[in-house]
Image (cartoon, helix red, strand yellow):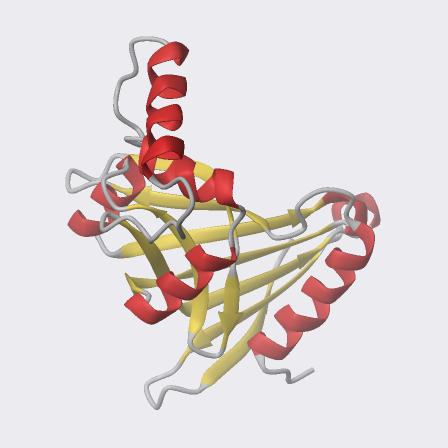
Length: 193
């Protein structure tokens, strides 16, 4: 039964990319603020490997504030068509500036401009205000590359725990867990459904 959890993730993720119609890289990101109040939202996985799972956001957003106060997070991938989900828990750190710059440069121009125009998670009086800010950014960067905003970048979740859940008939589900051991390797086990 032994597997490396990253290899198993890669296999399941490849199957999800082949079968899910929309955003197979969508994941729920759960954080908690300094007082322990939880919050969860959907984000997109933009990179992964043995060093962790990377997503990008405005560093002034609520999720960024939570992570600044409590640098732990949980991720959940749910692929309904495959009847599978993967839970991941771990510590969170910033992705490097080079990683953030490279990913930002790969985004569509309107997405880049939107990152400059948005004060993510801050109150907005009406949609017209945001649209006006977007138009200002479009004019500001007309004819030039759009650089990454200084308050925008990546976060990496470095796993200490994985759970691979596979739906089975009559709620007799399969649940495989991997937990980091004292030597930095992975201890594997099963959970009752």
